[in-house]
Image 1 (cartoon, one colour):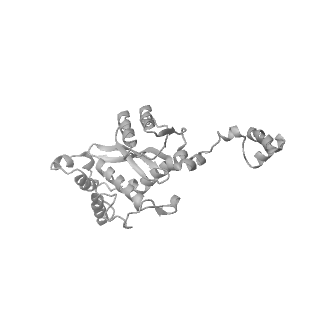
Image 2 (cartoon, rainbow, N blue to C red; image 1 turned 90 degrees about the vertical axis):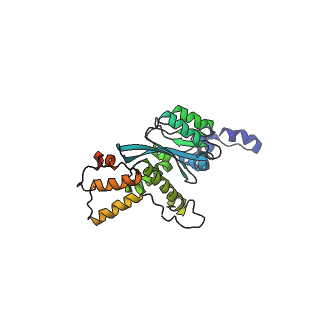
Image 3 (cartoon, rainbow, N blue to C red; image 1 turned 30 degrees about the vertical axis):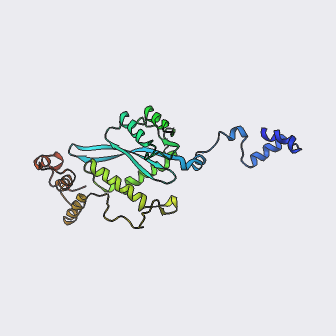
Length: 273
């Protein structure tokens, strides 16, 4: 409003203050000082979507020779293209690990954040001050979102739901190698074979020949063997048989006495849940 008043002498006319105020209210326009501070989050996303990336953690339960282990998976997603990068998988996401991830992500030639200017993340304590400092040194500004606001990082949250519902909930993971293989194959599927409603139901990065990958599956071959045995036994199969087959596939070894003595392989008659 002050700017308009300053132009009145130039325009050769004068308007009452009340009439200008009524005009601004009628069109939903706040005064100029407030207008600069009231940009909505949706407007910010639309304006900077080409320069924005989101990051988050999710967990996966993996069966190992030591028992059930929780793995932490850190990923980055570019908001405009929806391209996903699996940044790292670890059991212990400590500060040293996070600093190395930040260095990898901000590499000039091949880093996951090389084309981004802002990085959205929640207030998880794993996003340490040193992690944020390294990200900032790579000319990417880390933006910590308010607490309990997953909707502000909706692209990353939606990808977590997709990978869990479409991949991880449908496989039995035996060892870290099977988790890495499942995620790698799912990311390839997400990019080149899965249509996306938010992008007009098109493939994000279709393959040059236009064909889907043949023979690539997020399910290890051992799970396929176990499924065949399960079908042949009317839906009931010993836990020993499933885990013996999959562990033999994932952990090749000549010392089968150590594998057979594992407590996870003792029960011979428990139905597969």
